[in-house]
Structures are given as C-alpha cells and as structure tokens.
Length: 451
Image (tube, rainbow, N blue to C red; front, side):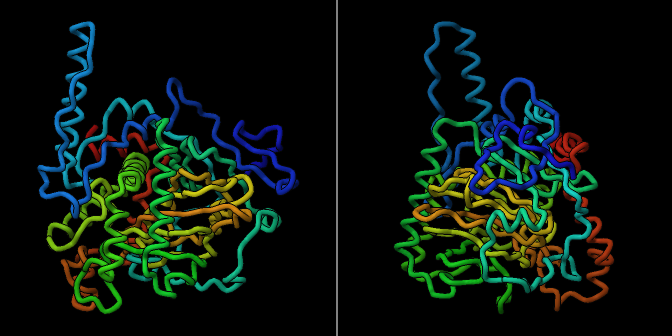
C-alpha cells in the first residue's frame, strides 16, 4: 500500500501532533466528481420516513397527504413542482411496506457511478465463515481481548489511517476490486445536525429508562447498556420470532423505533446499501421480505430499512472492544451510526483489524462493514466526551431458515441442502460475489434495479 506524507494527505486530513507524530495515511483515488458533492446522492435517496408499524393504524394511513404546490409566478414552474410531487408520492407508494421495492433513479446512478476508493491488500475470499457459510466463524480474541486500543499502538503495528470528514462517501476495496466496506457519511442536509442531536438524546434517555440486565451492560463488546430489537432465530427458538422485552422495556423500545430521527438514520443506511452494494441488497430483500410474508406475526423495525434486526448502544461512552459479530451474515454489510459529542481526530475511530485500518468516525455519520467476519472496535474517546451508536444487521440464521425451505438445518436433509445450495465451498465463492466490484458498480445497479 502506498504511503502518503503529511504534505500529500487529503485536504480533510487533520494533523494533530499529540497523537500523529508517526503514521501512514491511506491515499484516496484521484477520481473526482463533477457538479454536486458525492453525498448529494444519499440526500436524495433519504426518502421521507413513514410511521413505524406499531404506531400506525393501517398501511394507507401512513401515506402523508398530497403536499401543497409551492407558489409560483409562472405556469412552467407550477407544472414542474406538481410533477415532482407526483413522482415523490409514486415512489413512496411503490416502496410502501417493502424496503426492497422501487427502482433506482437512472440520473443519480449514472452521475455518481463510483465513489472515492481506498484499496487494501486483502482478498475478501479469505474472510472466515462457518462451514455452512451462513454465519461467520467463531473467533476467539486471544490477545488482550478486554483491552482498548490506542492510536499510537495501532500505528506501531502497521495500521493505516483514513482521515474522514464523515460526509464524503468512500469505498474500501479489496485486491479484487470488491467493495468490502462503505464509509457512507451523512445526507447533504443542513438539518442533519438536529437529527443527530435528537437521536443521541433518544438513546441517552433510553439508557436511563430501560431496565437493562447486567449481561447487557457489561459484556464482551464493552461496558455500556445495549437494547436489541427485531427478528432472531436460535438459542432454542423453534421458528424465527420477535425479540422479547419486558412490558416496561417494550415501551422504551417502541419510543426508539418511533423516533423520526432514528427512522431517518435507518433509512439512510438502507439507501447506502442499495446504492453501493446493489447485489447484496437484492439478496437481503429476496430473503428478508419472504420471511416477513411467511410469518405475518413478525414485525419490521423500520419499514424503510431491509435489515431485520438492530441494536441500540445507549452510552454514554460506547467504545467497542475488539470483537466479531459471528452470528451475522458473513458476506453481508452492517450499518453502524455514531452519535454523541467527541473529537473524532482524537478518539472514537473505527478499527478494522483484518484490513489493518483505523478510520476517523465523526458523530452523525454512518459506515457499513462486514461485521460477521471482520474484527472491529473503537479507539477510546477523551475524558468528558460522550459516544452512542446504533447498528442494523441480518442474522445468518434467518437466511439459512429461508434457504432451507422455512425449516432448521437439522430438519433439512443432506440431499436437500445439496440441492438447495450445492457445496458449501462453492456457495461461499458465489456469496463473496455479492460484493460489487468498483468497475462493475454501475452495471450491477442497472441489472438489479433495471434503472
């Protein structure tokens, strides 16, 4: 990997000599975008968020009234505004109740064909999955499993730094051009700071109100309260079901899911996955949507997000220890959003251990990583600072349940498994192909969404 000197660093690289007296900066591609900024595309994909199903009386009631046309001094302006409002309403009708529905706008897809890229010396085929390839391999963190990593220690071990403003979208690309992680950023929206503040406040309040058991306050990921919500399968469950909470905590969870700022964050991550990993997005939709259709009692967390499960990390100092979420789809991408008040130049960095990357992760921004196979964690924040996070994911057991014909792996015969997915090693190679290659991203969008 090439090494940049400080004089060669991107404009958004922050030089703080207290922690950066010797480190390597990852170079970005020299490609530039014409016209509007890259993150405009994600602003435009950030659709208005319908109400959570628990708070709406019916599907039709979630549709907003037809927006009034703005005043215009000319007939053409009036007509354009009317057509724009009609198109927006049509898109929402198409997407109603199905996060995998709808088409991608051709103009956006072509204008923002490829993001900035960071290439790493890693081949995604070497990611570690279980033999069945439906979940990640269990990895025991042998060395310093309960310690926090500091910047200088990581630099001394050869990690590369990605300075990131939390706004401009970057793709992390492996040696075969596969997009294996996405620094999605945030919508280009002047009100987004208000969204961040509101979501952070909601997480803080939930952490105070929820009756969180000790094993969800002090755990292998860190020392902070967590609240998981959504659909799961495993740990004695006979069929997939909704995660259960006490009556008191159910009220706290419902408030989080109904929070419009959190809904917007969830929808933004969904749009980022759809735009930068279209084949993977379609794979999720082809398994998650049938699951919800087959079991009407299952509840979606958000009707603008394909992910069936989520975890709220309620702070006030969410710093993840080195870990891997091996029960998630091993070839999937999981969104992580960070909130709070901290200096991202000094702490809160995202560490991707297999990729040997340490990434500035400003509050209010979103990243998508293969959390089921890549060990990850955070650099500690400074004293007096706060950090919260919100993650979405797809348990691999749900995908396996659907692929095996809505039955367990034990109930599915060896002949049935071979017929359904073939040899595990062949399935793994196929699954890794769900990561779009940078040079084929536009083609994948066209084929998947017929844009």
